[in-house]
Length: 317
Ligand code: FES
Image (cartoon, rainbow, N blue to C red; front, side, top):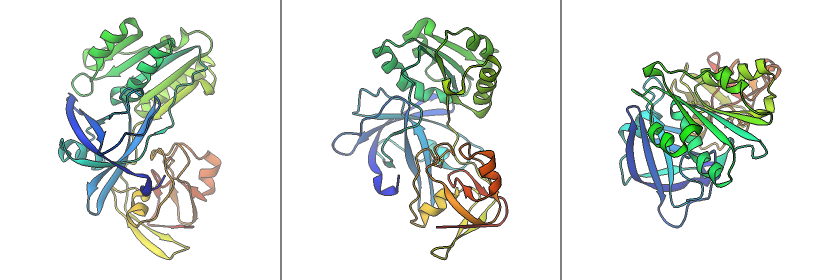
């Protein structure tokens, strides 16, 4: 996807849904929004002037309603500036540039049952799953883990709407989900979905391994995008262009700022779209797309999340 595909939307409502989370309603400036499916995300461009970020956010509105999109942004104070910009700078009436929706986290409709694990703001893609699962009369249960003093948005609504199909675990009240017990107690053909921090994804995957649940039945989406690192220089061997990548800018963002369009979908090191060939320099791989052998060969990298391990990289661009 390139910046040419971007569309403009207007922020028509902002709601503080939890102490650390704001929900944004986005509507088209004209015409209709592109339809989307459950689990889809959009990439939002934030910032001004030189300092621009693009972060992916799950669409949490009902996929049957394309009059508006809704996203939720958790304030990440220790992270780069994107979420702080959304929390502090964006107001009702502002225009934002977003990508059309893409879906890397769609439900596997062939499953006999769907078990959803959400951690904090990781509830968002599942908010778009719920109306579609209800419409299809699919069997599902949602396990929602959060801290009420930070991220406990939507627990009351979901409990009321879903009854026993929604179990809430508030860590601030000492409530924890027994992931192994939940997973062991499911019928054959159940698929499991995780959206939340890396630790939750790892815990569910490790439990699946122990229980012999096939890898194809486990689906996950990390909501963390690029993380800051050391600044470095990058040379583009075909054009001879040299760029500086700042500590809180991803390599992909630095390329985009120089008007170099790189295909991308997830901006989180998962989809493989942004792969670049590297001819010189050591890479700090941070993606979950390349295999260990590919990472060790040092010939390719995912510029959306990965960076230079040293001071300089040369890309075959
Ligand atoms: S955009 Fe998906 S791996 Fe980089």
